[in-house]
Length: 150
Image (cartoon, rainbow, N blue to C red; front, side, top):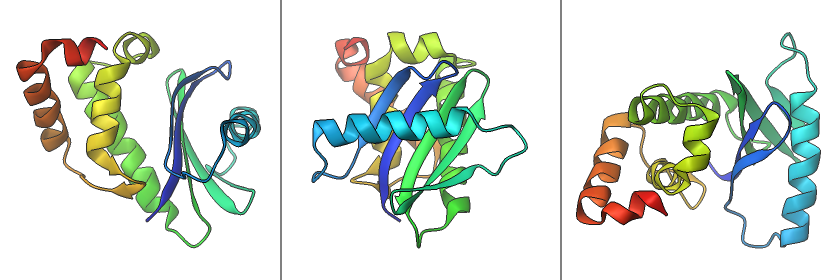
């Protein structure tokens, strides 16, 4: 599975985290894509499907409280695996922050990046264990406490 991008966006459309794995995309292309995808996903009703086709790939999104988690994948990829990965990410964040909220993501962005990087490597699913991801984060912050504060 190749995940092209991961976005965490609030209800107002403000991006809280953006991770792109496609090195061929320019900053302007990323900005344009992000704007289009966010607008398309947050305006959909709760009864609509959580999969949207856009620019030759699928965008899978899920809303948790006030945050939308969006992932872009190739058209041939399995949407359910992506939704499961999204849920695993949210559960991991929830366990680490003891009920994660938007402010946690904003204030501890380095820790969030460590968790995301533990679950995803170059757009591929690297880990599916919440415990393993948290152990890596805890190990990194024990050896370098400032790593979680960056």
